[in-house]
Length: 319
Image (tube, rainbow, N blue to C red; front, side, top):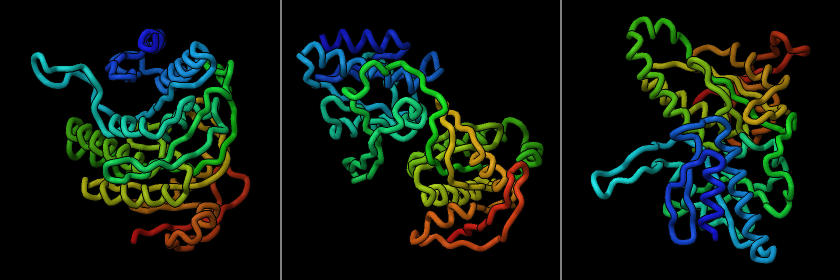
């Protein structure tokens, strides 16, 4: 009954069933086909299975689920009779470890997944768990399936939420691409984004968009946005790249994975003021991270294009 209901739900939403393991069904979405809204489809499957099985067993929740999003290798692993078509990567390992922390009737969402579906589940409670081995601490959101009757698949737009917005832009990328050639530049940019996504994961950030050699990401904690920027700057310098970063905290409108609002514009304009290897933040960010040990240099009050009022800007130099 459980296997049948779960696999049917996965297949109906263009997912791939990876394994039937003991009392678990493991699946992935977004590969090898249908990359559109893979986070939403995975979440819908999880909530449907939790509720259907609860109703079948007399409304007693006996099923829990975990959904995480991130970069993973999807393909055939191994050779001959031991080969398997599966997903491999850090995000897979973390999802598997989170299974020990989910309770019946709960769905645990990792940060990047939650950003993609927050418009539907804006009141999901936060929880910090410690993963073993290594005692890695990971922040997740908890959705209680019993509280969402009738809401699976309902798209809710224009929900407002407080976010720290980060814009990262590579400086001098056109000249470098001309110097090293298209193929080498593509390889270098690929390496850059691999490191970006690793660090976003470590610092609780969520990728919103990448365009060319830029990055738009959001963070719940402004201090983590600054730490991400410092760590990414150090890695980019090792690659021969230089980035400029702008960070601001404010309310944004959530529409799926997209974000909109004046706070996004402010963060973008602040990033445009930065020079290579500089991290500029708004006065809001500077005030919010007081006591974190992060040091700032006052850059004065600046006028930002398209923003009605001037903003106090601070430099966050590296240690």
